Image (cartoon, rainbow, N blue to C red):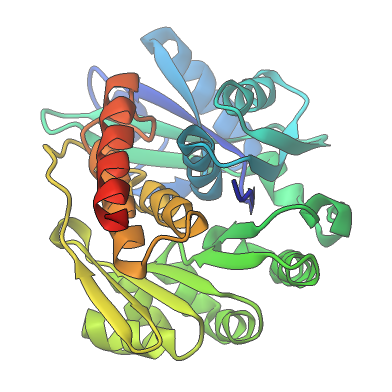
Length: 332
């Protein structure tokens, strides 16, 4: 089985259901927004959430993807940075529980966290994010030894906050012979780092994952299919996800629309991360392009049926069964 290495922000999601909007007002958090906060504010919010009863879930875009590839059976490793604290230990033990080989470095700062306030009748989510130790990951933390022996290298676009880190990572992955995939992560990240992203995609990246808005920001094209075709001019495989409508995949002259897998959606958080995991797993098995997209769609359909980014055991069982059936049908 081919192996994969991921790098990203090591964040722990702290989920709390709010009885009212008092805490949102206290910390000036507009309902439904995502705000970055400093360490002092992050610590205060965490202490205020604890009495409500919180759920801790190891997260971060690339970490979510790598956890899923491990569950699917790929030997999977992850590079990130955590603090010497409770949340750092929780993040490490969560990854190890799912079979991820952790390459976690330590920082003097507190571990990064994404505090998720769930409020109102429609379970609207408001985020206060403190990146903390995750921001301390620097190019000097990386060495060729971390990359050798891996067939794939997956990187999240959120790391573009440190362009020198991303450049060093893709250079080392390329030197180690890895197939490199990039999840663009956020349209505002793409907008503010467009020239840099074009440069590394042209030089190093083999597979690009983007949603509609990220693809539009990267290509300046409104139509997702036109964006797909433009991105595919810069890499081997382009994937543009169009939410609940499905996804498009293209490599060279091969192009397919992937229907969304049937699901009863509750929460779209993590759908892109798990789609990437399924796609890369399928690709590692040598599956055709269309089937890689369908495997991605199968896994994404399971995560949208749960609150948060962790698929439960029954749904994983169903996903693996559906993937086996798809592979058997393809190999007939």
